[in-house]
Image (tube, rainbow, N blue to C red; front, side, top):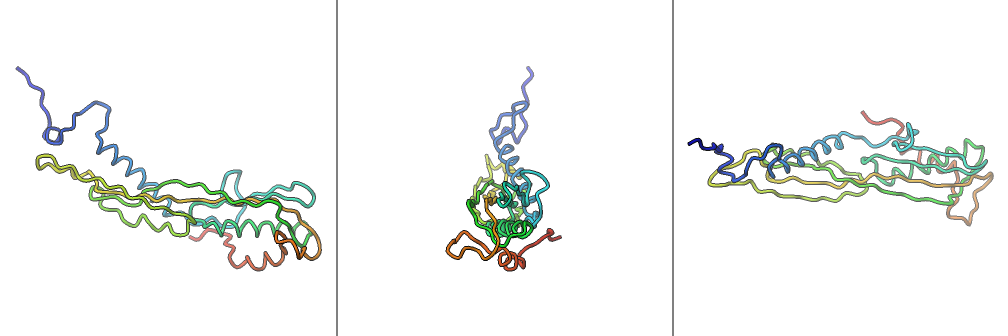
Length: 215
């Protein structure tokens, strides 16, 4: 009588093969691979330079002239751009628009900074060669660290060499700052904390403006 043959790894691990279905270890390994690739991409990204956004929803600044002396401006950075940089670029663009409009100061009527977060993996265990170095996410403005551990399965002395020990996940955050402001001529109102001298802003922030990405 013919008997079904079961491979040794399957028999030892206790996992039953199902066509089209991944084992638990394979599913977790796939997840780790995806997280690791995201980390590799994120690790190669430089901070968003000061530039006009190519189109809506892209990194950089965008602005709209609402009235003769009223504007709306937005600056969005990538996940390598700190919050204070995003906010400084917003103010710098507001100063530029003020001077281009022939005015001297601007008064912010609304100002807000929003954040968007996502998770990326940054290390694997033994089955993937312990890829350290996926960290280096400093300067994201916000970063939370998670670590998940998965013990290598050993059934009756069998060891799965491709099942990793652990991997880690970072939560990285990107920021978007936006504001509406009104421009005016002459000295800025001294008693209004929302008023900015456009030339002072441009002069003081200019040393921190990076117009092209570092190679």
